[in-house]
Amino acid sequence: MPELAAPPTPPVPLAALLAREDLALRQIAGPADPGAVLHGAHTSEMSDPYPYLLGGELLLTAGVHIPEAAGSGTYFEDYVSRIVAAGGAALGFGVAPVHDTVPRALVAACETYGLPLLEVPEQTTFSAVARAVWQLLERARTAELRRVTEAQQSLAAAASRPDPVPSVLRQLAQRIGGRAVLYGPEGTEIAGAGQTSADAPLAGLARLLLSRASATASDTTADGTHLAAYALGTGRGFVLGVAAPRRDPGDHTIASVAAVLLSLLTGEHQSGSGAARSSALVRLLLGAAPAEVAPLLGGERWRVVHARPDAQAPDPVAASALGAGLGSPLVDLAQDVVRVLVPADGAPQPQPGWTLGVSADAAPADWPAADAQAARALARARATRTALVRHGSGAGLLDLVPDDEARAHARALLAPIEASTTSAALLETLRTWLSLHGSWDRTAVALTVHRNTVRQRIARCAALLGTDLDDPDVRTELWFSLKHH
Image 1 (cartoon, helix red, strand yellow):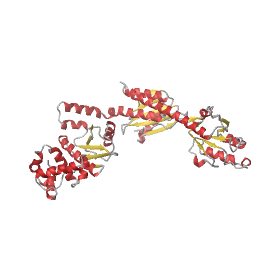
Image 2: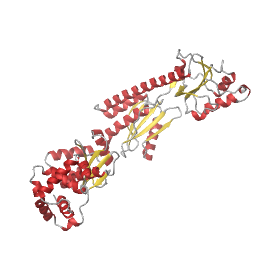
Image 3: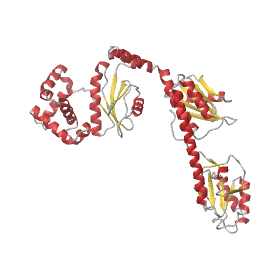
Image 4: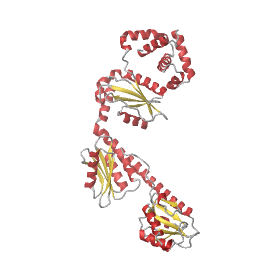
């Protein structure tokens, strides 16, 4: 998926700076190129400014660095050649307070190396020139951001039309002033909009992107047409191709937005999973058992994942991204937790910014039990500050006791707590407290309650059971019973 980012600040024409009457700048050497642009301004009195330039700057100097005998040697040629080598866009020379006029040798050197040379009059300070450059850059960035925002809004509106794919392509072609094409998995054109003379090179770039399994690719034709290709989704085989006579700073962002929208529009069509999920939902609502519809969702055994974000409350966008990271679109956003149903053929991995609890493999009939397992695993993960905790398989000594006998023993042992009006809270607290080795603080964190509340609930459990919860044997028996409760 192409990365979405704010467009970089567009450069500003050198002519726009020269047009500022308040600065009274005058170009006295170098080519009068209307396409000359500035990316910034920098002041330096170093005899070799090369190490301090990033490229595209207007370099301002008052000539303090110029030696007295500079005119008779190669000083100015060396100085200008280093500015050009560093990518400097223009040189501004202040005629005060060191020099009354711009040295002729400097004018000649700028002509030789094709570097625009501006005369800065005595009344104009370098800070005023630099401020003017930054003001022009800010205006250009604001205009570009406005253009990108309007394009994003128009693309989103196009995606909601009855013919969303052609509409998005038409809107994209219009915004970039070129052509936008959707290519299928075989590299064939599915839909397109706009005009270009580079259809063949664009199709070739799309096929190259498919063969390399890359996210993006770009190229430029002999006539200067800019080409770009964006892979849609992950492994679905669709590619968005874009051709434009020019490449403005915000065009990549606009094309990336279109690629995201087209990924959403083509993803369900390619995989058919959307129709399968709809069919499964309808069957469930009409009375089918989960085991009957599970094959439509992609498997017979599943895991339930409970997740909570580490920072703020979960939102639909974050929940959807989590599901994508876990490889499943079956996502349920609750008030404080996100639940994801994941096929058992892939083990869920930690997700940045999330704390996860994962159940054991379960058939559809056991999904409710797996849901409870995932909830307990998440509570333990949060208490231990672990990114991901998986529910144990339960194999070992527990298998020595038949399930029916173990459940009967658990019911008998926990009956006093079950009879309480707050049995659910007491059992949850007791289970979490035992799983965390009797830690009051970590249990409070896991349950999001005050530590005193934990103490009160555990004391209530001890009173109802009439036993000493500090006894290791008692704790072991209670843990055994809770595992079968």
